Length: 412
Image 1: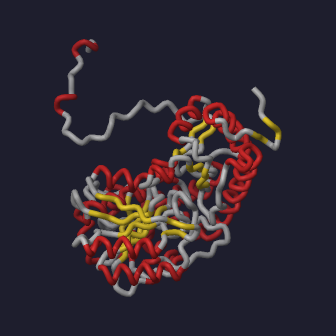
Image 2: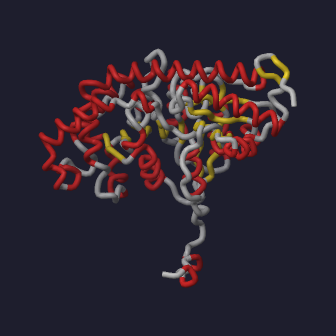
Image 3: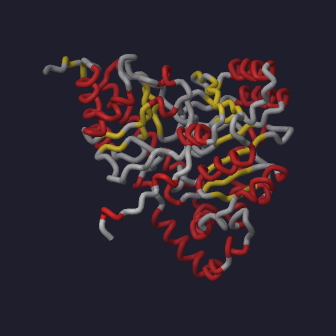
C-alpha cells in the first residue's frame, strides 16, 4: 500500500484523547525513571522452579478462563495474600475480599470507574503518583493536593480541606494516600496520623483509598498497620502489588475491599481475568520464599540508595537537598529554585540520562518545579555514579548549578 493512499483516521478521533505516543526508542543509557526494579534481584531461579511445578500440576486449568477460580483471581494467590496481609499489615480479610488485578494501575482504574464521575472532587497528596494524577485529569475530576511534611500527609491541612468543602456543599469522593513509603517522597505515615485520618473519614463520610504498593520495601522491615486494618467502619479500599517486591513486568496487583464495594467493582473488570500463569507462578513461589526474598531485595536497594546519595553529595554538593527515604526505590531531590526540572529533563535525556521531573508528580507545579524523582533500583552502582556525574554537568551548563563538584570549582 503506497503512503499516498494512507487512510486518515484523524477526523474520526473523539475529543479528549491523550496526545499521540512517541515511538519507543529504548531506555536511556543512565535510566533513573519509572518504577523499575533491580534486575539482579529478580528471583529467576525460584520463579523457574515455580513455573515448572505449577504447570505440571495445574497447567490444564489454563483451558478455563480464570483457571475456574472465579473472576477475583487464582485462589491460592488470594490465600497467600490473606496470610501475608495479616502478618505484615495487620489486615484481617478473607480471599473473597481480595481481587487480583493487572498491576495496581488496573486497581486505580477499577476504583475510579466505580466511584468517580466527571466534575467530582478527590483529595490527594500534593506530591503523588503520576499515574493517579493522569487518570484523574483524564476523567475530568478535580484533584485537590494536600501538603506533605517529613512524616507524610498533613492531617491539619486535610481537616481544613474537608471542612472547606463541606461548607461549600461538596463531599469529596475519596482521600487518596500512599501512606507506607510515599511515592515520591519516601515517608511513612505514623500510626497516630492514620488514626486521625480515619476519624476525619468517618466524620465527613469520605472513604480512604490506600495505595500500599511500596509497603514491602522498608529498610528496617517495620511498618505501621495498614489504614484498612485500623478501620472500624469499613470505609477504606486498599491496593497493593507484586511489582516492587518481585517484578513489575509480571503485572500482578490486588485490591482489598469490603464485599459491598468489591461487588460493584467486579462487573467493571471486563478483561476476562488477569494473566493466569503469572498468578499461578507467584502463588507457587511466594508461599515458601517471599518472607526470605524481600529482606535480601531491600538490603540491595538500600545499598544502591547509599550510592546515589553519595554521588549526589559528591557531584552537586549543597545544591541537591533530600531526605533519605525510609524504603522504596525513589529519591525525591530538591535543586535550587532557578532549576526548571522539565527543561533539565530534556537536556539530560539528550546527554543519555533520564529523570522524572517534579511537576509530573505534583498538584503544585510551583512547589515541584525544581524537584525531581530518581529511581535508584534499576541502574547498577557504576551507572548511578556515572549518571549523576553526567546529570550534574548538564545541570551546570543549563542552569549554572552546581558551581562546585567535589569541592573543586568547575572551569569552562
